[in-house]
Image 1 (cartoon, rainbow, N blue to C red):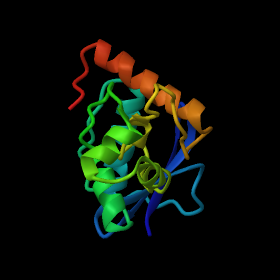
Image 2 (cartoon, rainbow, N blue to C red):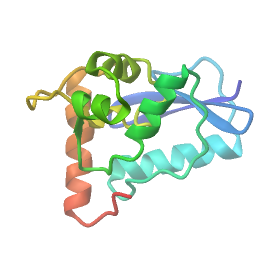
Image 3 (cartoon, rainbow, N blue to C red):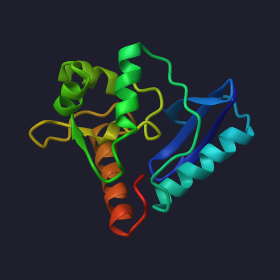
Image 4 (cartoon, helix red, strand yellow):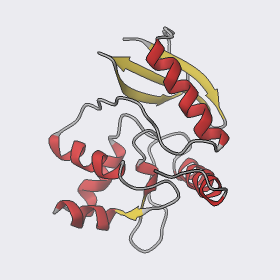
Length: 156
């Protein structure tokens, strides 16, 4: 499976590809490095995101998961950059429970590209985050997006 690692403001991340689609974004440096055209585009789009000049990704994604988790991840992708939704709001939209939405967030194999960081607690709490340094990383991503949107970078 081709993968490419690169440095971001949050440290090293590794993007993996299979069958012409991104299947994973992991924190840290991957063992194998194979720069494919798709992984090169993914790196470029992610670098633009961290630079605050891109808030929408145009990449084929193929996350592995249950049908329910895929529905949650698809819903996450509809939340514009600079905005959040509560676990409960997403659960109500899908006819589910907030805890199940939280489980899908924690199992998201392609964080940032599938923006699970945009899901927060019902009472305004930040909630958890499974990537990087946990909730601190989530706060950084939300602040980065808020700053970009306030500068007029399109959020859709």
